[in-house]
Amino acid sequence: MLTLIAVASLGVAVARYIGTPTVQAPTVSPAQERADAAARRVAAIWVTQYVSHGAVVSCDPVMCGTLTAHGFPSRDVRTLGPTSSYPVTSAVVIVTQAVRDLFGSSLSSDYAPTALAAFGSGQASITVRVIAARGAGAYWSQVHADQSVRQAIGKELLTIVGITASAEARHQMLAGQPDSRLLLAIAHLASKEPVYIVDFGNLAPDGDPTIPLRYMDLSESGQAAPISRLAYLRALRAGLASLAYRPTTIVSTARSAGQSVLRIEFAAPSPLGLLGPQA
Image 1 (spheres, rainbow, N blue to C red):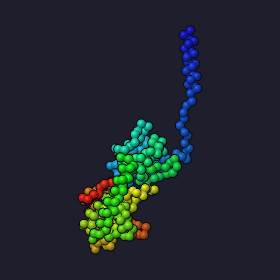
Image 2 (image 1 turned 60 degrees about the vertical axis):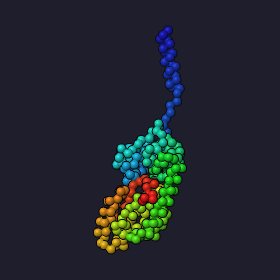
Image 3 (image 1 turned 120 degrees about the horizontal axis):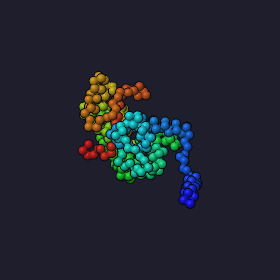
Image 4 (image 1 turned 30 degrees about the horizontal axis):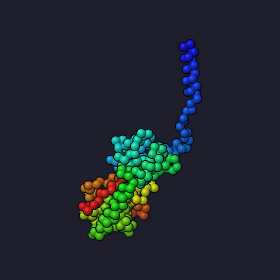
């Protein structure tokens, strides 16, 4: 009797097992896998080059692995998983399809409203976004207030003897577009040597237009100062070395028109509220 009961019980268990449908992960085509990998690679390279290595970056496990493989410090990387809450203690989040699956659209709309850069398309699309720890409403209020302050300081800088700007750079300063750290750098440099500002910009594909411009090009020629080019460059570099906020990149480069400029660039994300009456 016991043997019959055991066999019957085993049969029921087997029937239940066989009758329970298994949930399979959706198949991903080789083409989609290649597209995903390509987008992750270019996003990781961009973040490693342009995002501050002191900023905490959140991402899904595969994206985080790609990011650290391309040189971003692992100490500043936070992995998002099924039990993760919104990464409000991070500075930047890399939004991949895996992250969209975790949070839907609410992460981007409520806590990461602006994109520093975007890569890929469709399911392979990736956006690198700034975290708004107190929510989108408070973030936008701070963004607009900060731009107003940058407009006022940009306008004032343009009245200072020793600061000259092209028509494009002048328009950008009056619109409050340059990063606050660049405005502080201009004021500091102009207290030592005259400067000619060629332009401001960002090297960020499909970034949000509200993101401050993080690099500026200064003329390397005697257009800025009546001394030799090499002496002038040494003076500029010495001035930049004594800044409280240090640029991540200081490099001589040539613009498309062939003009030689000194490019000074700060890392993302741009700090808000840096400037005030004391600045």
